[in-house]
Length: 253
Length: 222
Ligand SMILES: Nc1ncnc2c1ncn2[C@@H]1O[C@H](COP(=O)(O)OP(=O)(O)OP(=O)(O)O)[C@@H](O)[C@H]1O
Ligand SMILES: [Mg+2]
Image 1 (cartoon, rainbow over the protein chains, first blue to last red):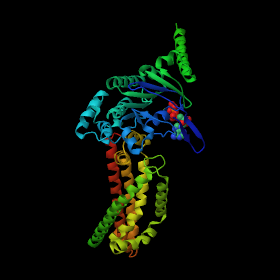
Image 2: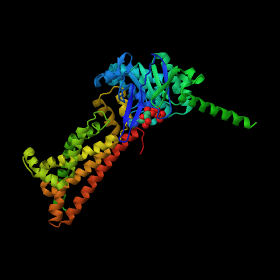
Image 3: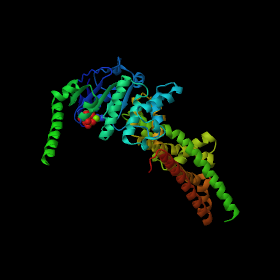
Image 4: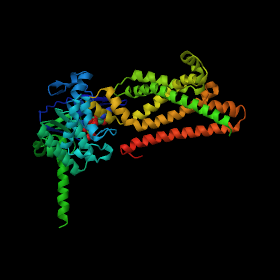
């Protein structure tokens, strides 16, 4: 798959011959430096961004071959969470989570039960009447996750869902995703530039560099035997940081 | 102030309110869809269509460049066609509505554009169709701002009714011209001005109150 952005001043090749296969039920991490094309890639998966060429298949359906109507139907089974949450401020937590269900013509009588169930799962049962502006960042992202999951999607796309959160909240959100992955058997594709996130929940990963996939495999390999430039740099930054810290700690004695 | 002045004032106020209310209503019915189309057909938006956007934008700009008195005069024949006369408050509603519709369309466009595109994308990502996005996302999210914008529009239309009043539409504007100005009745002039000031204040206060009330509910103090 390829994608080019054409701006008045230049053409930017954001993705070049990207070829990825993600197993059902996997938690798949995509890592890369800023501007590498991570967001573009994940946004192409549900066609918030139109790929220029190539094919996207999710759960046996060819997303790229769909017309508008078909795409709308397919998107109802692809959940997405955003770095900036993108919750609707005019709606309560309950209404935000119910929105995808209404859009999908979920049986009216079951909406309430389903929303309560999913709010329970993300630990926000007591906040259902609150408005997003009354919540903390971590709570907002839980609502985002609840909204993405309410219509029982087969895939969850996550673009830096935890980048706006503190480490502790990040950890609890990651635990939640892991939990959901195990409970519901949901495939999760997540983008990050934090190694901790990768280490914590991903099984497989891909490294993206200047719009190209330069390395894929199980997460352990990334840490033990990094091949690509990006991976090596990530690891060396991490090691450099650790060494410095050890040195500093030793200095005091 | 004697009784006939009061009576004149009441009749004038009644006519003005009648013109303002109906003109706003009709202008809103015309302007709201136009404002929505302006936003939805923008590049990258839910119903992207550069051509429609361009044509509509140009028409709106053309109508808006008419000074309101000229627009009213130009549109009076249309009033004759629709309501059968060019005199009186009802006749004035025709040019007032048409004159105000593009103004309202721009105000609505502005408010709707304040809604962050991320929210629209989130709605697209759950498979919402454009109509759902407009009615369930764009309008509710922009509501406080829409109300503030409409407040400005109502006050603008109140001003336009005074202009229409000068050429035979009745209302407070005509009172000020016919008595206050032409017959040197300073008391009537003063009374109409005070009434207009109170009217405009009232509209502004009501608009502010409503917008703040909604914001409070969403806990977004401003
Ligand atoms: N709408 C756009 N128009 C033009 N160029 C764009 C657009 N969106 C992204 N790009 C360009 O495409 C490239 C990839 O951007 P992308 O947002 O996918 O990066 P990223 O890996 O998600 O980075 P970050 O970690 O900072 O979020 C960048 O060079 C960026 O400038
Ligand atoms: Mg990004």
